[in-house]
Length: 427
Ligand code: AMP
Ligand code: GLY
Image (cartoon, rainbow, N blue to C red):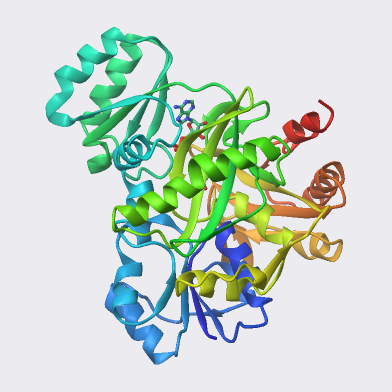
């Protein structure tokens, strides 16, 4: 089958690799892709601006499956437009994508279907006074979230009434645009985070190995939130008891709930989890694979990944298409441009990827570009340097060995990816 992969980050490079290695994959096209993705797929040679452009491209190139990586096209209803034209899509409809595109929707949904999560209240711009009154009555810290998509920046943890009040004014005055017309104010949860990805056809599901992201910019989970500075899988914090809770209290009720709302969820349901005292709660749902979790999870999967996604897309999930590598571990360290998540310089030449790959690394491109035929950094998160190992310790050590082989000016990375997992192994 011919596949069109939509997206341009590290997650999509990992997807491109798994799809391209699948037996059922014929031609793999990528749009817009990145220099790493273009090496293993055919770059769509023109701009696809509107949904009709995508539909026409799919028809002209006999595309059997479209795999949508990022959330924005899902929130914009690209899946719906393609499905209406008879094209199979891995990715939820616009209405189902509200689990990510509206935090208020997600919270109301979790309340309705009794999915464990932080308690919350929701206010829109016209309710600013009520929101302030509410902020006076509660204990701190609390978390204020813009309702809509805000490129990972719309979550602010506040430690006092004054801080919360000024955050609220800023959000309602438009720092996140329309995404901030409504806010969710929620209880601050303590604990350790983990991520679970469920591939689902809307009824049945397959859980991929649990993983752990590292969202803050500095070691020891300090500093600003980022898109994610590294990940590893499987994450031992998700033990058998936690996994059962995730299935029974989160994934099954979410899938059944979305069907009961007549907005069945097809694609990858990502649950961001907070785990404390062997109890799990949902921090957030995403409606696509995680980045950089995907880079650490997909290398643990063998078989025909493309066929798995196709089976989910046509509503007949076939879990037999893949198997999960037992006793293997994977670690992905993100190389970023120093200064990220704020300002950073671009255009520095990157070297050493070939030697890292020769040594066994999987190097996923994210913010890279070609300039005068040279590979340069073009984004905050530049590469995901990934290693498989027989143990988590080995995967981490190999990933950091490969990291040393790659250079570019202002290269920055965290030195502690996976350490929380290693500590768990010894608890
Ligand atoms: P999100 O964009 O919803 O993933 O939130 C970004 C990060 O903010 C999460 O990964 C958590 O680290 C943190 N966060 C969000 N909501 C809460 C909460 N209710 N309690 C504690 N931390 C939170
Ligand atoms: N790694 C966090 C995310 O994909 O949203």
